[in-house]
Image (cartoon, rainbow, N blue to C red; front, side, top):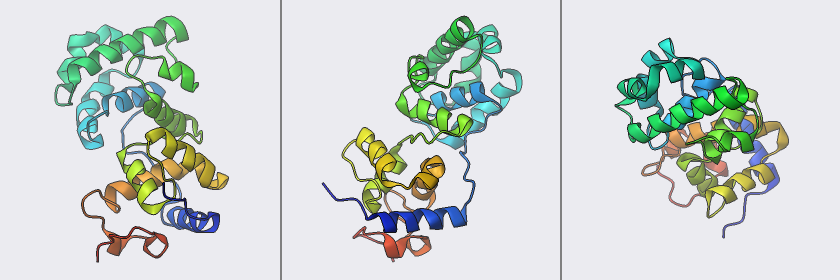
Length: 214
């Protein structure tokens, strides 16, 4: 198992990320905590671009769990048919909407445990909502963060959970809130899976990845 970079190097990496993008934002479109939760739940095994394309029309008419229940499962499917696994996702969204109405008065809970208890909401989805809506330092590890964490040795780990813990342990507290977005954006646009764009990388001189591209 690779050892993480030293504290000073990790701090310099995130200082550069912060200087380049002081307030990084998630790319899923939403209007409130509920639509964010739905968008993240729909984004599993789908791209943000594809989800946004499907939810623009949906969120124009549905922005509360009550309205989602009124729309119904088949009505929801009509909006999200272009998204992978849309039938199962629609079933989960209707089920979680019912729970939000019946148990939380229509509000989205701000507890990880409560969020994860909702149908179709795993730890990653819960962490995205906690981070993006409530500004908590929750680290939602997706394929991009897993790759960047291991390549750069900012947060090496053999599992998603291990990388999440490594980010919490290794990244200085002042950068914890936005660490999730900086790493996702870096992985999506620079440190790509097949051909990283190392020539445009802000941290190339600090990164120990051996197979850098020219």
